Image 1 (cartoon, helix red, strand yellow):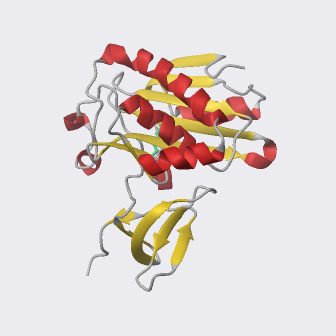
Image 2 (cartoon, rainbow, N blue to C red; image 1 turned 30 degrees about the vertical axis):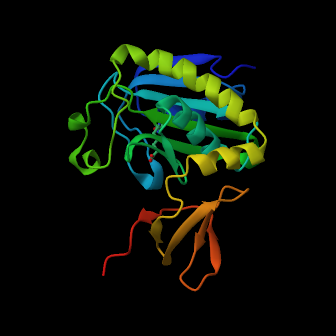
Length: 228
Ligand code: BTN
């Protein structure tokens, strides 16, 4: 079934990911889409909130029944394609334009029960000045008009259909072209190193000082050296 059907569009909801989760556990088919104009409890990664001024962002969640471990990166690639030529994917699932975060991807689900929800927020027409202070410094926008939200959704669904079906080696090759971290010093809870690409399982390869490599499978990485 095509991505985006059936579709539930809500003027206001807590979180489209939460609505999609309820639909998924109730048996909704692959491709079911939930969109909203406003979220009162939009979820970001690592327990953070996702905020967007009413109507100015694309807020959507898809129920998927066929997916693999590259899902969030596949979604990131699709969003980057829609965001534009220079858009980069910052592992594991941010999309940057001119170094600023214009979109985020949040995958939640229960693979053992055969479903995942991929939630995507894209700052289509967001005025960054309207975002909460703590995210303003890093946030960006596509800088389009509010009436571009629906066309961006249509474009995104087409790109997602392509990237969700693409062979893993095509996904990793495309990621290599849009990798925001490659060659950059990154810091994570246990260390510091230089990002060296994304591997076939979606992990971030990092080269350590001594030359050996580690693969980070999830979690948070920060650009730059750790604070002294
Ligand atoms: C992140 O960068 O932390 C991920 C943000 C994901 C936000 C989107 S907005 C639509 C969907 N519903 C949610 O509650 N979260 C995702």
